[in-house]
Image (cartoon, rainbow, N blue to C red):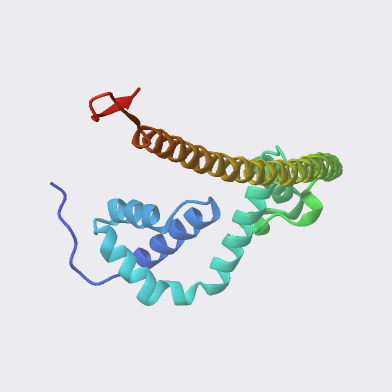
Length: 214
């Protein structure tokens, strides 16, 4: 098991921490990965490296950190354009000399073909977006027309339902009135039958007795 150092940080330790961390920033990696690499190299924990960077070393390399972030952004841009960042940096380093190897590539190092290709891609993107917008506008217009037709159909059906309900109410009222008339007629007929039965006729026989005539 590798022993973990507990002694004070030396200038060489700080330099290794700065170089590795700046490289990770420039390459788009994380500071945590940088601290782990430094810890393996100098025999310290990644937590100790992170604390040393944030509390002391980072303050001395503010300008270098800014340049590393710019390099990371330009490297990411070149990758999106299909350009090898390493080749561009090598070309820029050759033209600028050994003194500028660690500097970010300038805008001039980006080839004209890459710029033209980027603009063409952007033009195609804009054209595609405009086509999609026109398609969406067409679909929206069709949906608005369909909605208007459905609203008109709904109004028509609502009127029809209202008319049917009115007709049903009239028929229902007529039916109830008819039932009442029929009930009254039945009662009247029943009473007439009873009264007819009550009006029985009689005659007197030879002996003076009353005899009912059927």
